Length: 432
Length: 150
Image (cartoon, rainbow over all chains, first blue to last red; front, side, top):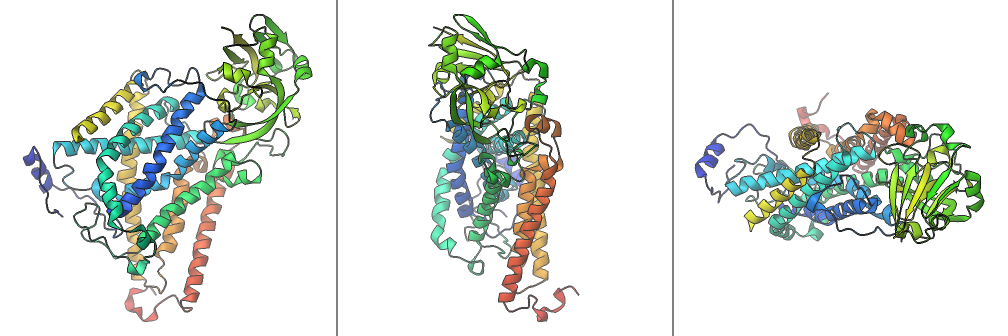
């Protein structure tokens, strides 16, 4: 198995001693493995992964004030107010983060499959630097799989891991960023060599019958004793692409309204509500009224909205309903990547700010009558003053259902769903 | 340059971990980090590679005019991929949080997955049957000798 040119760095004695003690590791013998296939898969990930990372980081900015984890030291993102236009901005960024992340899973698995011979290469390192690089590859593979697994569990509401998803996913992201940059810098020459070692056009025309094992036996990826081919290289790429298409087909439904939503057969957002009655409130919920633990009486006739600013104003629902004349179609988009567009009717937040005597507030703190970590959200001046930013009372022509935030909820263009507070109890406007 | 890049990578990772240094769940995070690598590299990869090797050997022993192996590979990999990605719903894990968040139960997922598996299997079998018919109506090479089962 020793390939030519295998020279050892310091401490050479250690690596030689290791070489003589090869444990019974599996030998990978696929004839289609090789620098070209690995490079093609690597190129796909090189294009896709930065998009997943960037859209993921943007989620932290979109969340706004008091993000989780709060203190991230130097790994803070450049602070800027999340825009309110276009209204579908967060729907696009977070939908992309989750969908592209899902679609790239088969590519990640195939990439790891394609480099499997390196995993069992013996000795595992030929120099100290080699050993350090292997540690960074462990960080890369570990963080990629960690982000995939925690992300997958989060969008399916399975918190079996028992730690804060937000903190772990953010830390994992930075481990991945560091390891990915190092990997790309160190392996980019190999990627270029691999891509040039075969012609994509030729490979796409090469059937199984004409598929031969890679002749580049100097590469660790190429089997020294390959099995006869059972799939062509184009077939292997089609298999990976088919896997990605399957995942896309099973996931894209969670951002679509109408009958196509049900194509997300295996995801929570392939369905709308348990009633599924097609009525005005039949669209996905991300926190049910039952789960909020709110006493139903607190949302009844006794409910009042408290507005604070230059003065404090208390309004009951009928007073608000009499003023609720602004209707607009806006998306609700969640960090889990699903989204839906509905038509909301309510009062512009800037009108409420004027009622409280602060027509040009610098921010607003919205509180729900619910208790809990997501029961308060700070809105920026831009979010309060946008003409379509609403305290919504009605959706699609009907009163909000309890699950959708009756008596009133916030809906702001491009604001993540988790910050569109439901069961609003008070809004405190702050001036300069 | 190589040492500098490697040190930078380790530094970013080390610094990122300081964010959760005071988190009592840090050992769990590290455990999951290592567990996903071990489960992939040490269990999943050898398992599916071994299963594929066995499948190739089996189909080589039963020589058919149209190779069967990819007609098994494709639906099995599709079924496995869907199972792997959407396991929580399919096995009904995290039902309480799922219900609290969505107002929905997890009942449809297992049935939907089985339907998907059946559909992929059926499509693959149909394509195989068409290929066999086109190849001359008889999938087995009858003179292949003792290699085939009875």
